[in-house]
Image (cartoon, rainbow, N blue to C red; front, side, top):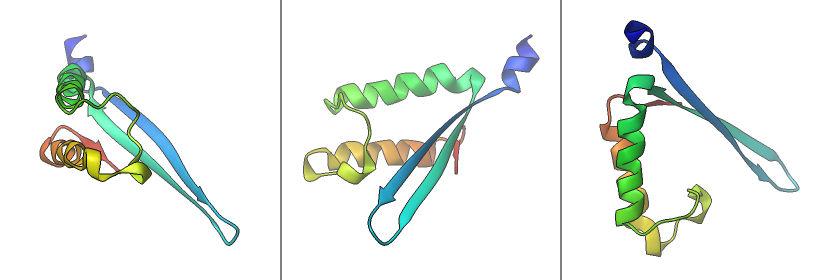
Length: 87
């Protein structure tokens, strides 16, 4: 059982669309998290949300000056965490 958890991953996917009269653009992204790291990763992200007083859904098209440091911290966490894979 322990080996199967170590070698298992959770995959989270989402899509984003931009629609206008000339074109429709859609992007599909995925985040891959080792199952045995999930709890630690979620805990760390939750700490960032709490420390930065952010209680909304992340919306990259609504980044503003008020939360720019929060978004930078989230991005840096993803880049610097070798357990996370994203496409």
